[in-house]
Length: 238
Image (tube, helix red, strand yellow):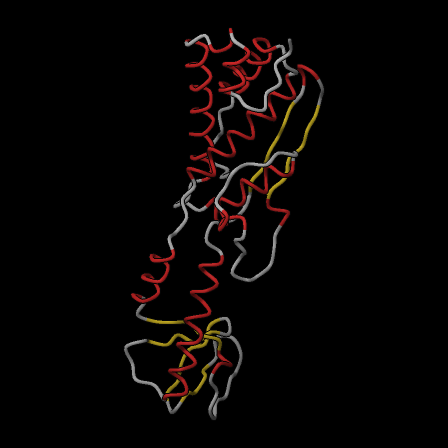
């Protein structure tokens, strides 16, 4: 998560210990069960752009960056930042990309190539939709749990087409009451200010602790059947 945001797990830790005592369930099992629920809540609160918004944003773009080698009629390319001469005018090339103003008129072939490039770009962005949600799902798998996320998020791939499994990981230490689960999600998009990964997981943690408090007040833990209904998957000791 972002380095300037401290995740407060005090309520979560207290909840897990109390829940383990109330259900006579191993503390380690409770921690992993509740951690999965927190990740599921974080995934639900993590926003994803809609397909219509992705297409609309592209349509409103006044310019388009395209690879310098996409269209090269009588062109000289002198390296990064150097001048590239395209049909008589000098255009600045930055990191191998040329900026085309979409309100200009271009030769038919060039315009067709620009449009093809736009379509590929939009397709890649749609394919990457849900990467932030997917990161919580991938994080859960690192400690052996499956959480629910939309199908499109499970299929999401970075626009460069490469997977980056090292962005999420977890470690388990200790046993019994000393068990600790440490999770890390450094996936780039989930940590963007607009997504706010640190914020959403804190909200999910707080919400889960309040859910437990309500269940205690409603005497849910006095009934095995009630616990099974509220916490499916938790095996309460007889």
